[in-house]
Image (cartoon, rainbow, N blue to C red; front, side, top):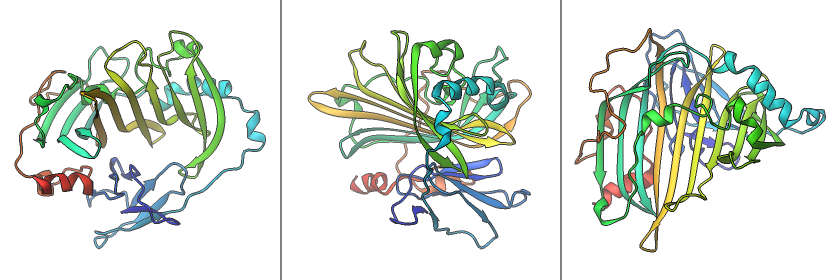
Length: 343
């Protein structure tokens, strides 16, 4: 479990990294990580923006860890002369170093829910193989389901619900890769960027950059966390402009990246879309966490490759943790577990 050392409050979505393997804490600050004991890596890294990182040497007895992180702050001084536009220019200049890598085969955990207030209508989760080609490749992202399960607590055909397609394949292509995104150098003229804060991540100073549309071609607003040393986006929280559509009332994306051997890879992506139906508010929530990755030479043969609109979750009567075997995953929160207890 990972908590704030001063308040003892749990820290949700803390990054847990061991070599190329990893996971995230759930909303209760809890996590499970199954590691390869043969790895040369001996330290477990726990990282959270605004807190001092912990680097813990593991042994065979470390099976129930309680980890406290200490919050830290940074005083803005002469670094204020470094403008938001300069930071964004540096981001563009370091793009090739930070984000351009060869083909990757990712292993990921994915979960989606439909909720209304405190009620969970639907929950589905699974383990997926993802082929993520280099940006220079003509290949497209490919996804294969290893194991999946779902449960409807309240029949979804009783509510108006959007057709969501893409799932994992959309989430893994973050804003750093998507052409036409707010991080595309060709789109920067359509946004206003401002620097208003400085924080810490893994012992390094991080710029907090706010942005919003400058022209009608600007499609989102939000905040970027940019590492002052590597000039890389390590986290992005953004809200697409939804003024021109009639369904969603609010949409939010969050992306986090982790650095491995000098390159920044996508680690966690979450999505929330809210809407109203029959005077009641609903939310579709999706979470993807990359739990392992390896280099690939071209597109591998993926068993049961999925199309974007595939229905790939299997109905499950129970949601035991034994379902995952040796695969890493994000634990269900206590609130989510209570939904099963009520049925």
